[in-house]
Length: 42
Image (tube, rainbow, N blue to C red):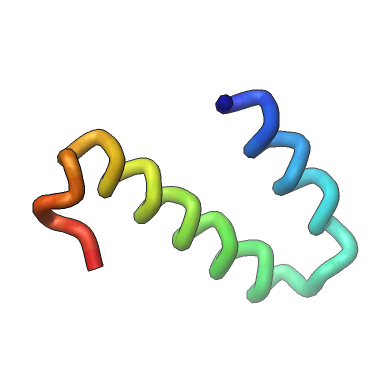
């Protein structure tokens, strides 16, 4: 699972730095939501 996400992040390296940070934040939020069981998501 982690390997595929890393590939996706590398694939979007063409985008701007702001978009990359936004994508990284969204990915981190998704991972946190999964670890927390979806209780503290949104």
